[in-house]
Length: 551
Image (cartoon, rainbow, N blue to C red; front, side, top):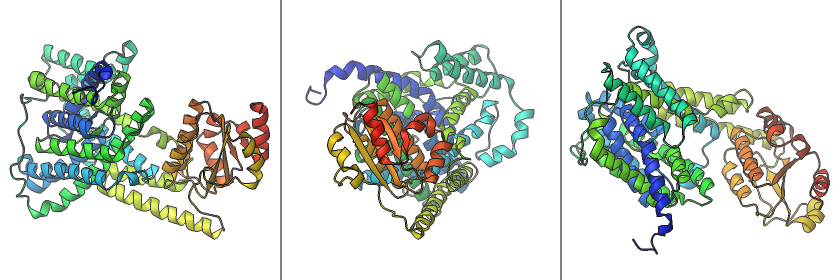
C-alpha cells in the first residue's frame, strides 16, 4: 500500500477507531448470533465477513458493519420458518444459507441499478412502525433467556407463555441479567473509555463463572477459521422457494435502508458524502461471503460507526481493522466466550431493543395526522405479532393509498399539487424582486408547492443542505402548502436543526391551518422556530430581517 492509495497520516486514527469499534461489536455479535437461532458463532462469522468486506468494497469510508437488531430479527424469523418447514436446524441450513446468499446478491443488484435512489421514498410511519416492532420483538424474545429459561420462537407464543416466567425463573440467571443491564446503563457515568457493553459482559460472566452458578451458557464455540457451508445448496425442495425469495428480498431491502441511514449519520459527522450505490454493493458482497461461511447477515451499525469516527477512524481501513480484530478474537478467545451466560446476552439485547424503538414517533402518535398514526400502529403490530414481510407491504400500500386520497382532496379544492421547488433557477416572485436583488448574498428564500409529504422529504432536505455558507437567514414560504404529514414534519425539523447549528435563522411565512397546527402539536413551534419568526406576510418578514441584521 503506497501513499497514493492510502495517506498514512490517518493510520493511527484508523487503528484506534477500528479496534474500539471491534470491541463494541464483539458482545453484540455474540448476542445477535444467539438471537438468530444459529448460535454465537454465526454472529461472529457474520461480523467478521461483513465488517471486512463491506469496509473494503462499500461506499462509506468510516462505516463499521456487522449484525444489527433489525437484520437479526428477520434472520431469526427465517430460521424459525425454515425449521418448521424441514423439521430440524440441520435440515434447514441449506435454505438458510441460500436465503442469506441471495439477499446479498439482491443488494449487489440494488447497487448496480441505483435502487438507493428509491429508498428515500419509504414513508416515516412505515419505517418507524417497523423499527419499533423490531425493537419489541428483541425485548419480548429475550424475556425468557433473561430469566434462565428456554423461549418460544415467536412473540405471540412468548406472550401466551408468560405465567411460566413468574413460576419457573432461575434467580441466578435473573441476577446476572439484571447486573448486565445495570452495568450497561451505569458504567458510562464512570468512564466512557471502555464500552459499557463489553464491561457488562465480562463482569457478569466472571461472577457467574467463579460463583459456579447453574445458568445456561453459550457452550462450545469452534476456534479457527470457519469452513464453507455449501453442502446441499443446490438440492433445496421446491416448496422452500417462496420462503427463500421473500426473506432474501426483505433482508436486502432492510439491510440497504439500515446501512444507508448509518451512512447519512457518518456523513454528518465527517462532513463527507457517501456513495449510496457502492455502499449497497459492498454490503451485498459482505453478506454473500458471510452466508457461505454460515454467518448471519448484517448492515451498517450505527453505534460501531459512531465510535469508529469518534475514536479517529477516517478511511475504510478502520472498518477493515474492526473486522480483523473480531477474527483475532475468534482465533484466540473463542473457547472462553463459550462460558458467557445466555441471560447476560439477553441483558445486552434488551437495552438494544429499547434503543431501536422509535420513541419520538410513538410520543407524537396523538398529534401527528391521524392517518400517519394509524399506519404506524398497524405496521408496528403486524411486525411484532405477525409477518415482517406483510408489515412492510401493508404499510407501503396504506401510505400510498392515503397519499392518493390526500392528493385527490387537494385537487378537488383547486390547490396546486407540484413538486417542491427551490429558488435557484426560478424567477423571484413579484413581491420578492426588490429585496432579492439587494440581499441575495445574505438571505435565502425557499418556495414550497403542494403537500410536504414522504415522497418529497428527501429532496427537501437535500435542497436545504445546498444553501450557501454565507447565508444568514432562510425564509420558507408556505403559502402553497396545504398539508404536511409525519415524514414532512420530521424532515422540516431536521432541516431547521441543521441550519440552526450553522447559525442560519429560519423564518416561516403564510402558514396554512393544517401545517401550523401540526408544527405546534409536536413543539417545532415554538421550541425550534419561535413565534416571532412566523409571519403572515412576506413583507413583514423582510422588515424583521432588515432590523435584525441591520441590512
